[in-house]
Image (cartoon, rainbow, N blue to C red; front, side, top):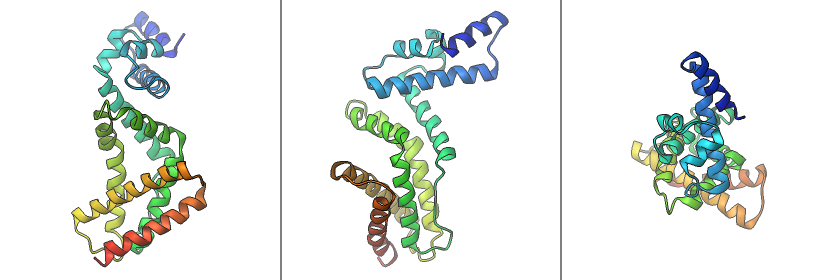
Length: 215
């Protein structure tokens, strides 16, 4: 019997679920939904199937998540919070030159993109975004933007930054776009590992820092 069902039934014998039981039920739903989205696809997965997989009644599911988009948003928030703990962002020391700031940040982004739990959601977005464009928007608002804000702060603290606030955000966005392009090319052309990422980060950092410092 799924753990969430055990908790609901136990709670039913003594009243409302405790805060910890509520949290466990929610996590059971998120875990079941993510597993089904990755295995069967977002479009092919129904709320009914998610409830069955999580072992919760329909009213329990819909009280927390009225639709799949709300549920997907909660999944991204949940995973983004975990990623910050399990794979904390790495930045150059404040006062480092722009090229080093970009290189260190890109290397960290490449390493993060190698993680299966992160790349799996990336594959899901690639497969489903055309039919469900709201998924990309949700991911951007709750995961990508957080990383972009961290990059901007690191850029701001570089020793030779002459960029405006808008230009710093443009540079951070370009860095993430370059990172995605590198990972896609690596998938098709082969090559993996830290040395491949290090060379790519250095090459991209050299080009971007020239434009960002001496524009």
